[in-house]
Image (spheres, rainbow, N blue to C red):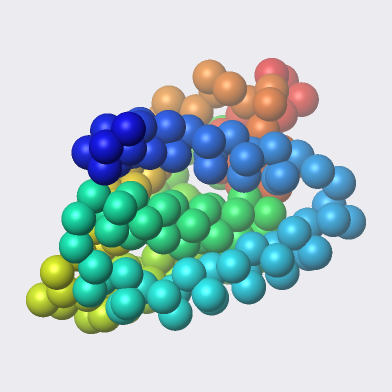
Length: 182
């Protein structure tokens, strides 16, 4: 397979694979979350440290590697949030039948620290890769960020109860109706 074909395959399957892996790990017993998160934190630090050198590479494999870097950094942020290590100042469920502004405010309070971490990593990637030959990690990270905001907008607008049954208990603050009602 050539570099272009590999880039397409990684872009089409990488996000789904990492999402599935993270959701699987989030459903592990909470007693194992700290160990898993420590290992992924170490992997993320090594990944982040390698961003400038991969940013200097060119070619298809450079894009694949940078895309994987973005996935690893993004996965760490998602795991931090879903496992409850980096959430926000409020962790209680939103009021039932709350209005749009209350849902938006409650949603921001539920994930504020994670959003600040996302902004921090995003700005750092932009700074590290400004003018680099291979800015793929920035573009991939920003695309993942946009997709996440799209999903959060659906939550704020009230589209929340489609897959409640499989959600871990750490997601309670995102669900308008209780998990027992699902």
